[in-house]
Amino acid sequence: MKKKILITRKLLRANEERAAKLWDVKLNLNDEVYSQKKLIELTQGFDGILSSLTDKIDEKVINSLPSSVKIISNFAVGFGNIDHEAAKKRNIAVTNTPDVLTDATAEIAMLLILGACRRANEGINYARNENWKWSADFLIGKQLTGSRLGILGMGRIGRALAKLAKSFGMEIHYRNRSRLSPKLEMGAKYHKDIKSLFSVSDVLSICCPATKETKDIINKETLEYFPSGAIITNVARGDMIDDEAMVQALISRKIYAIGLDVYKGEPKIHQGYLNQPTAFILPHLGSATKKTRTAMADLAISNIDEFFRIGKCRNRIN
Ligand code: GLV
Image 1 (cartoon, rainbow, N blue to C red):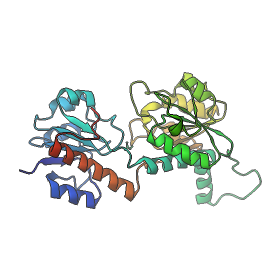
Image 2: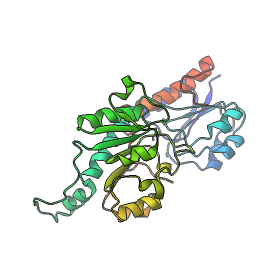
Image 3: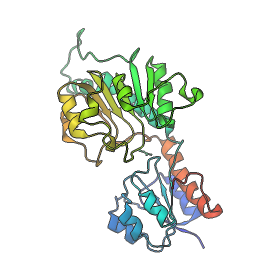
Image 4: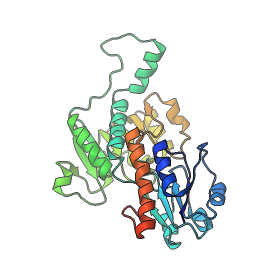
């Protein structure tokens, strides 16, 4: 008998076709974001869930899932939307999609750095309103060449970003749970603590996972560690920034500009960022290329397939 799999959000067509060949699938043709209540109702009689980062699968949801559900395969590398420890207690496997989105996300991290440093938001507004004229001091921004990039979280995405940023002439510094081997470090300077990293970051890129330890890691106190006029960018998760403190730092010009792709409570965006011309903001586009989204869904499908065929799965995280 074919396994029954609930796919919570719409995928690209080729991916949905593959899933439909493998299993008895329930697709979400209207791409509605299911409430927790609806998600629980829809899983009755299902063997697995292919979830997305918009599904908040917390302990309460996990404990309300029917016992038929054996796997939650998240269509994302991040898995902060799933209480994987609660899932483990119920023997439900949780998987993610590492590797395949590394380059696409590092590209967006670079775009955030460029956009924030070179005042892209203000430039776009002037150009669209046709109310500008060229002059020697018009929209002077910060040049990347020779500046120091701090990378918080030197996993796959952080390392891919380091390579790109080096080609722009930036000097790379990083903080990670553990120091990388010289081969992976590729000349980047390791910092034992965030104070040391932030104090040398002309530009910071947040690339670390959202955990209890990293929640609000950018806050009123830690913002003081940065050089005056630093730039902060975030391609990971909104949970890492205390938005109120960040907006105040932008207003006081302690922080020159910010580049964001992710937000606490997305799709909502803190009004303070919307009001700030120095905020270069994107709507969570990190992995949004056809090549990458196709590869991610393909991997999320393969994770379920592997799990049911051989009883384990390479990308299991719990
Ligand atoms: C995107 O944000 C992801 O975690 O894959």
